[in-house]
Amino acid sequence: LADLTDRNTALMAQEIKKLCIYIQEDRVIEKKHVKELVVPGHESSIFNLSDSLFARNKQALGLVLELEQSGIEPMQIIGLLENQALWHLHCLFGSGHSKNIRPFVVKKIKAHKPKWTQAELENLLKGLREIETGIKTGRTQHPFASMAETIGRFVLKPG
Image (cartoon, rainbow, N blue to C red; front, side, top):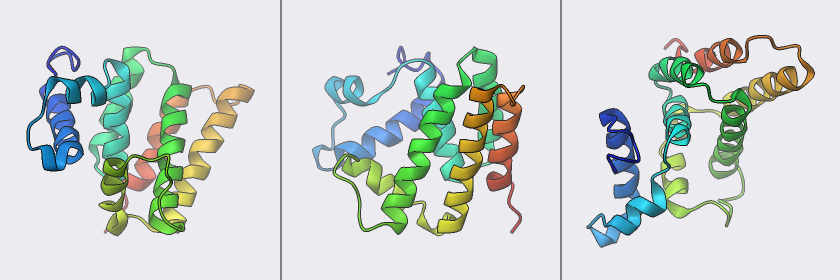
């Protein structure tokens, strides 16, 4: 776990939380669980951003900056966040959860229900798609600034 997370303690804590949700009845985190669930490198940071965004945690804005400094492609981040927004919409406001979404992910998503309305998730998805279109057409000159602005509308929401 330490090697996969570059010994980042915040990231390790997040991954341990994910592992605990996943193993539930097993009660013991084994090496096979770590290999199966912990995503190495930049992908872990993207999932950290996703977790912070959907928990409506202000930390998400700092993670956008970290990802920009790491040199990761903005489209990789946008793609994951769009998928997560779609999964949240489907699990929280759709007809149930998809067979393609793992049960531990559904459980994690359902914990976010008090924090989001359907309209907010739809607006988030719309904002992410606008950034994607802007990147693809060359209209968005600063994709990370656009991401921070869009994410900020949801994590800095008053009240």
